[in-house]
Image (cartoon, rainbow, N blue to C red; front, side, top):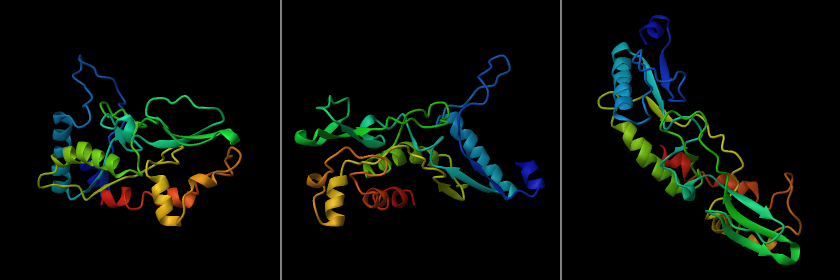
Length: 221
């Protein structure tokens, strides 16, 4: 931090990611598990030193990206809509949304099972459902409240989400209700007569794209 200050750099971001070195008992080097007491002590020191040197200190609200971790069960993990041509066998956490046997179409609420990328030690786990307030609140409680314990008189200048990058998530539990409220009709009976392709999705993107608006950005500000 002193070298950054001397070089004219105005601040830094703390983004805990995967270890660059393995623990080495011989040299005394060890990685600090994410959100552990030792990790928070290091974060507390960084905040105090940044204030002392007049540097801006920013902090991401999680480790790696997208946000998630061991505190996110499958029920709160990033969802997706699975489409089957035959009567589907439901896996853990899946539910049947709509069935059209005469069309050979079955819509299943499923999950991407995407894991947090570049997670620090102790931060590995499912990516959360950014469309779901319960998932966001669980993350804020498990991660945000714990990080806040390190702030004291030297809180970061900003706490933010620097990347979403959630793959293949095109569904959430209250999607049909939200669609009905926003568009004025029930989407279920209007499912296409043939399986959709990448160019033709049964769930209009304008609705799913708007779903995070009252949840994700609002909840973290």
